[in-house]
Amino acid sequence: MIWGASDNPATYWGADHRDRIGWQPQDSAEAFREQVGGKVSGNPVTERYQGGAYCASDYSRAGPSPRETFALD
Image (tube, rainbow, N blue to C red; front, side, top):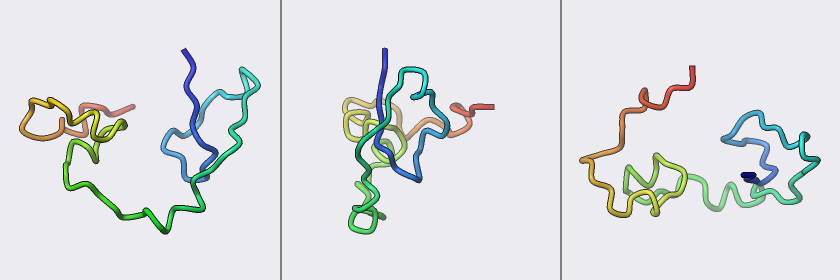
Protein backbone atom coordinates (compact mmCIF):
# COMPACT_ATOMS: atom_id res chain seq x y z
CA MET A 1 0.00 0.00 0.00
CA ILE A 2 1.32 3.42 -0.94
CA TRP A 3 0.02 6.82 0.05
CA GLY A 4 1.10 10.24 -1.15
CA ALA A 5 1.12 13.71 0.29
CA SER A 6 1.56 17.19 -1.13
CA ASP A 7 4.98 18.76 -1.31
CA ASN A 8 4.30 21.15 1.58
CA PRO A 9 7.35 22.57 3.38
CA ALA A 10 5.60 22.26 6.78
CA THR A 11 4.58 18.63 6.36
CA TYR A 12 2.93 16.73 9.17
CA TRP A 13 4.55 13.48 8.15
CA GLY A 14 8.23 14.25 8.63
CA ALA A 15 10.62 11.96 6.78
CA ASP A 16 9.17 9.62 4.22
CA HIS A 17 10.59 7.21 1.69
CA ARG A 18 9.30 8.60 -1.57
CA ASP A 19 12.73 8.13 -3.10
CA ARG A 20 12.36 4.35 -2.73
CA ILE A 21 9.69 4.31 -5.39
CA GLY A 22 10.97 7.27 -7.39
CA TRP A 23 7.99 9.48 -6.61
CA GLN A 24 8.02 13.25 -6.12
CA PRO A 25 4.82 15.23 -5.44
CA GLN A 26 4.00 17.90 -7.99
CA ASP A 27 1.71 20.12 -5.93
CA SER A 28 1.79 22.07 -2.68
CA ALA A 29 -0.96 23.70 -0.63
CA GLU A 30 1.48 26.30 0.72
CA ALA A 31 -0.08 29.09 -1.39
CA PHE A 32 -3.33 28.65 0.57
CA ARG A 33 -1.84 28.59 4.08
CA GLU A 34 -2.86 32.15 4.97
CA GLN A 35 -6.39 31.69 3.57
CA VAL A 36 -7.18 28.56 5.59
CA GLY A 37 -4.77 28.77 8.52
CA GLY A 38 -6.52 28.89 11.87
CA LYS A 39 -9.89 27.68 10.57
CA VAL A 40 -11.24 24.98 12.84
CA SER A 41 -14.40 22.89 12.93
CA GLY A 42 -15.10 23.14 16.64
CA ASN A 43 -15.10 19.33 16.93
CA PRO A 44 -12.07 18.12 18.91
CA VAL A 45 -12.13 14.67 17.25
CA THR A 46 -12.16 16.22 13.77
CA GLU A 47 -9.24 18.45 14.75
CA ARG A 48 -7.14 15.68 16.32
CA TYR A 49 -7.18 12.90 13.74
CA GLN A 50 -6.19 12.85 10.11
CA GLY A 51 -9.37 12.22 8.19
CA GLY A 52 -11.23 15.07 9.83
CA ALA A 53 -15.00 14.72 9.91
CA TYR A 54 -14.80 11.11 8.72
CA CYS A 55 -13.05 10.24 11.99
CA ALA A 56 -15.75 11.94 14.05
CA SER A 57 -18.59 10.05 12.37
CA ASP A 58 -20.03 7.62 14.94
CA TYR A 59 -17.17 8.38 17.36
CA SER A 60 -18.25 6.92 20.70
CA ARG A 61 -15.79 8.38 23.23
CA ALA A 62 -16.62 11.53 25.17
CA GLY A 63 -13.55 13.21 23.63
CA PRO A 64 -10.41 12.40 21.68
CA SER A 65 -8.00 9.77 22.95
CA PRO A 66 -5.20 11.14 25.13
CA ARG A 67 -2.32 12.41 23.00
CA GLU A 68 0.19 10.19 24.82
CA THR A 69 -1.65 7.13 23.50
CA PHE A 70 -0.10 7.90 20.11
CA ALA A 71 3.44 8.82 21.19
CA LEU A 72 6.03 7.75 18.63
CA ASP A 73 9.00 7.32 20.94
